[in-house]
Image 1 (spheres, rainbow, N blue to C red):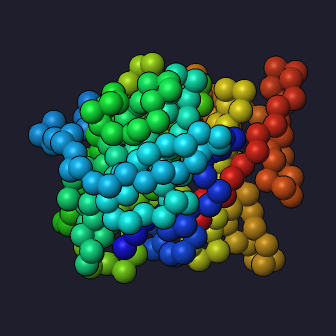
Image 2: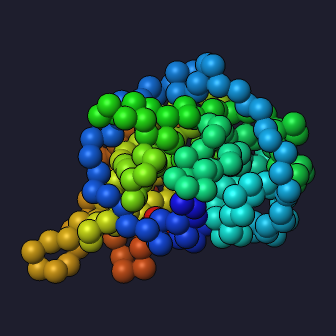
Length: 262
C-alpha cells in the first residue's frame, strides 16, 4: 500500500489520502510529546541507498530517494523548504504485500542550497518509532506529508496494521526545530463524510475538522493555535467558501488559507 505541501503547505492533496478512505478513528495510541522519547533509542538512522529521482518544489529541483516507486506528487509532499534549508522525510522501503516499513520514518534538515536530499548530507531532526503497540497489536507508523514555517515543522502520520485493509488514526504533529520539542496537535478523520484541512500564517496554525450534519451539509470545528506557545487562541474564526479562515486578534485582522488533507 503506497502512501501518497499550508501556505506553502502540504502539497496539493495527498494522492494516498485522497485515494483511500480511512477507517473511522479509534482512540489513538499514547505517544510521548518530546523528541527524545518519540524517537526510537535502539533504532538506526542507517539508509539503504536507492536511486534518486528529481522533483520540483516551488522553483527548486531536489533529488530524493523513492525506494517504493513513489509518485512525484507524493515526493513533493515529503519536502518542505525553510529559510535555512529544507526539511524532508526519509522514506523507508515498504513491504509490497502489507505496506509495512522495514525502517522507521525520519525527518531531516538539509542546509540551504543543498538539493540532494540524503542522510549523509543532512541533519537528523527526528526518528519516528517503527511501530507502537495498541490493542495488543503492532501499528506501524508512516509519515504522509511535511510542511514548515518559521522554524516549525508540521507533519502527518497514520498507522498501518499488516493485513488490515486501511490505515488507522491520521494525526497532525508539530516539531519545533529551535527547541526540539515534538507535539501531537490533533487526530482527525477523512472518511464517512468527515474532512480535515489546515494552514498557517503570521505565527498561527489553523485547522478545521468538518463533519456531516443532519441537513446533509458540513459543520466546522475550527481551532486557532499560536505557533510560538502551542496554545489555543480564544477567537471567533469565520471560514469562507474558498477555505480562507479569518479572525481578529489584538485588534488585527488575520487570514489563513487552509488546504484539505484527504
